[in-house]
Length: 337
Ligand code: SAM
Ligand code: SF4
Image 1: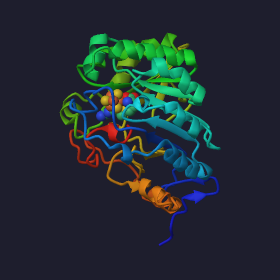
Image 2 (image 1 turned 30 degrees about the vertical axis):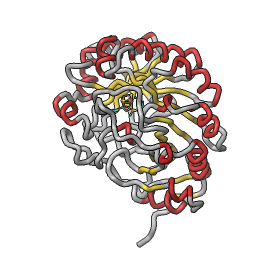
Image 3 (image 1 turned 60 degrees about the horizontal axis):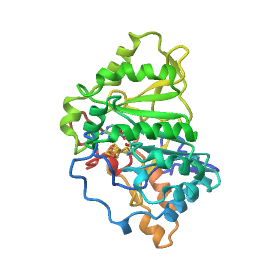
């Protein structure tokens, strides 16, 4: 059987010809919040410190991928900002030749104090999760009081620090925040925010809510169309699986991420690295390659990465109301979302 060439010069591709240039790195599985659609209230069986990749190990993996076509990196988690001295990791990754974009996905709680150090270390922009504009709702969804004020302060700090364009991630939940879809979209008229509505994905921890309270992005767009002319536009920098729209004259955009209603896998350009060093070709499913132990043993990672690219699945197998396609994931925080 002919092997599909995954590394060609300075590019890498999977067996379906999708060019891979983006790596999402989870730097911790822990979090300071317990969002109802993500983690169970009691938390998860956390990784131990020696199971986590060190910052130097993460840098070393990025340095293997960069000459082979990796251009963009995102730090995620769990909550990445709770890992000690994150700017040091940002600095290490930003110094790898070929890395052009280094973004962070955060719940925003610690961003007020971290925005400037992260920017100075080389982070380019942030995605902030904010599921409502109402304090009681945010605190209830995050299961932590005081979250709302801190996220807003973080959002402002990110803007002042120039961590832009800012994308705001809103997980849609029927009966919890779908009545704010219009408010979120309206905010993009005057603020340069890129609001992205995300369909809830089923995992072990959220089966009830994801089955009963699913709200599709198509329904969100229908509500928005009643407001006026939404024009389809190319996304902001770092465009991922979202489709974007803009109201005429608006500063920001509205995006939809539809993992459930429309499979978003066709243009998938990414790999994932978990906090304990598993290279995952898909957010879901059980395919992963341990890079941590071979790296610690001084082995060549290239053949392992090559094989992982080769077996990257064409699409995920998620099924509404079931965790059958999630590969045993309890929460998206385990793979970085
Ligand atoms: N803690 C950071 C945050 O919340 O932005 C980064 C990690 S979080 C797992 C990454 C993204 O996944 C967030 O935007 C979050 O809202 C989203 N997310 C988590 N669980 C989800 C689920 N079951 N379905 C859809 N999105 C989810
Ligand atoms: Fe934490 Fe992000 Fe999961 Fe919320 S979505 S519990 S902030 S990892």
